[in-house]
Amino acid sequence: MIRPVSFGHPDAVRLNDRVQREYAERYGDDGDITPLDPDMFEPPRGLYLIARDALGVPVATGGWRIQDANGLGYTDGDAEIKRMYVVPEARGQGLSRRVLAALEDDARAAGRLRMVLETGTKQPEAISLYVSSGYEPCDKFGHYRFEELSRCYAKPLRPAESSPGTAAPAAEGRMPAGR
Image (tube, rainbow, N blue to C red; front, top):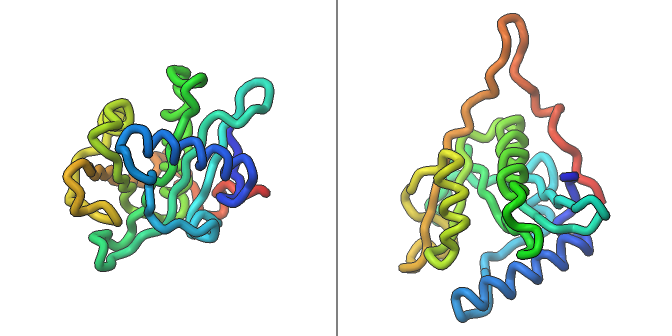
């Protein structure tokens, strides 16, 4: 079950703490120091999702936030993926792929043109997920754009296909954020 929550929700905070510890272990630093504010993930500017297992335990997260052209290398219409994470004990079940698809659908419905993300060379499973989901390397952007271990990827968010006589989903069909 995947549901929207606030980035400040206690379950989101706990999972964010876990992913930060994993980043620190993999990279030998303080984790991801990209400035994030819970408001960045509030519709219509973004969305934050939590996936729960059959017992209701939070096991995966992911969010997107609006980015437009700025000095950090983004372009107008970008939606940036942040905090994609699946707890180790729930990996291999397709959760990250489902969360990613839901984020792409929501960003598309919000009118964003391109999904972008930054990951690192010490996260080969993340790179594999993104490449197998249609993401391609792109010019570096964001907080880590000058870091050697950083890798940036992008995927166009083409309008959802619709049947003849039906319109593509509108922004009002977006997932509302829960608390």
